[in-house]
Length: 135
Image (cartoon, rainbow, N blue to C red; front, side):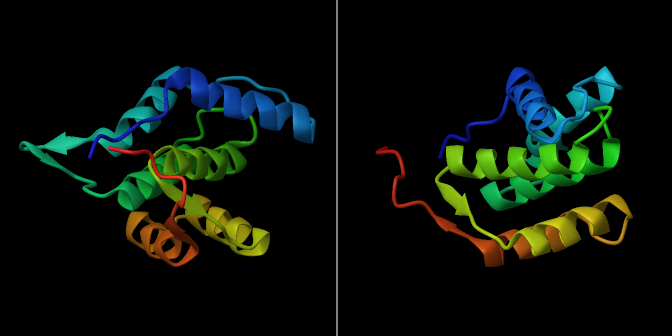
């Protein structure tokens, strides 16, 4: 299966959209950190992907955008929306109560949740999309 990853422009556009919607300023604070976030779901070590599945890749993207704080504001919101869009692009739908998503984002930012816990949460809150592309 071919994975469709989000580009830098797409993730910046997500943050810009959220900035307009929620009234904060879009600004990339750490360009290098944003690049690390974008590359995290694709990481390969000793010839093996660190995050093998789509949900794991989405969890890694969400964690890195939350923790590396590449934007001036809206990092947690951007992380959640980027992970959700990544999943949709790859045949999944993430559907979770807002309160759970907020709690997970705050716990991730405060270093009490990491990729395995985010993955477990996503596994419980997502399913295969009925609109999957034809292969």
